[in-house]
Length: 555
Image (cartoon, rainbow, N blue to C red):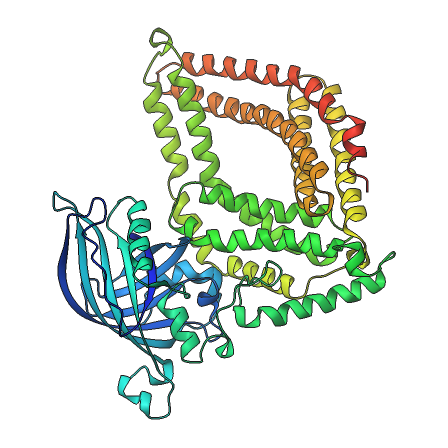
């Protein structure tokens, strides 16, 4: 695994007349210590159409300074990036390129620009001599990739650029408020916040390599790139508008866009695009095993697949059904480790609540052994999936889907009427399943019926979430009420799964001569919890299924 450093910094523009003001007067800063000058030489890599730059990601090979090597910077929040590092090598190292696979796909990473920087560093320290932040004054020279081999070639017909800037980077886990204080002193001295988020962004713009030399551009929601570059985003938006125009011509009731608001195609594609964005953006986080990343990525796959089924009048099911099959496969692969973690934690918490007098045998050790056996290889398997051809093919398919969405005639109709119809159709499916579950005899048949109702509740909730831009507050409330039903049914299903695991644990303990009493006790508690959820369901369902909630959805 590559080394990771959290980078929290602010950037400012400077010129030859800029003089750094006295920063020693800032609260907590007792001294400003000269840390010398460094000469840095960095070559930045990207695809030919700059997919990484479009996503605010930078990959560079840098020599000179204290941290020579390969650096991959992934955006976390404005002014915050995670820098992943690998040792120097001639070509981009696989341990870093894996983290951008969801962006690059099978595209080639090539040198796009070279930067040489003369950096003068000062360290802000507190009274105890602890570093608080570093202030770097950078004199930067940049050339496009064609001139990257020899910086002296800029005068030979290749466009180059020069500028000065100031970077203030927080040291360690310091207080980000210090950056605000330093920023106020700098701006009071006439220093301006940088217009570009990174040196690469400025270099691409000033050397004519960025988006046909255009000024920095922030993509609108409907043109924000998923895999491709911002350079091609507007072209994609035009193509999408053309496709929507065709759909509007087919659909009934298509009128002037300005008067009737967004179409059903607008709303559904916006939702689908958001889920694809989440899948792609979370890929590096899943690879890094960051908290909750696997769960969030799996939810996005489920939401996207659910939208295909709910909005079949908008998106052609002949085209989306095969994508749904692959999304279901990916969700299952993502769930292997996640489900084990959740189940183990549930059982561990249950054991912790059992009094010591009733904890008979090595129950904690037995649970740990059971969990580790299930965990063995799960992490490696998931990484193999993300590195495999099937996942890459799915990413390409999603990209193609967004470029040429398979819109049907209803896509051109006003969004409210189509969205309401889709949500209410899913609701009726949920109502049938819930009523059937309530009428089913206790035991396995009811458990299976309740599980089916849970899946229907999730689908209805996702359909209502997708409909919010069209239906507003009523859709938001409807999704919230349906979520309550889903959560109650989810608690019941979790209990069913937990009881299966406890039965397995008790059997293993019995065979090992340890006795299964404690696991049997937990089994009984889970059984009681499930019965409690079954008793609560009629009231929760009655409140969620009131006619007025459905009436509020109708335009």
